[in-house]
Length: 126
Image (cartoon, rainbow, N blue to C red):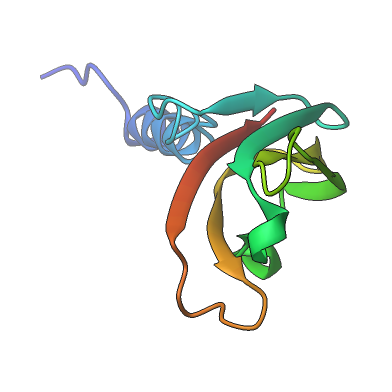
């Protein structure tokens, strides 16, 4: 009886298959729809309705655990009229590749446990 495959060729084939599977660099999160998709070094802005005259401001509540973006700036533009609401704008910059969320709550600095609004954005940095 003639051997079709030698033991060495089978072992070599298995090694190639295992190596190919282990080195698969497909993004396991590729199907997740990001709210913002940017490149490393690129900046983007998130704008919120806000009213600083009430003491409420948007707070980035998971800043210490996010490693793919960092804040570049934060501004508030007041509306016209006494006590009118305005716009709070956060500027971020991509610092490393990955997928993460940035979470915000709208609270007063002296009472952060009582947020009146929360929101989360999915960020992908390529």
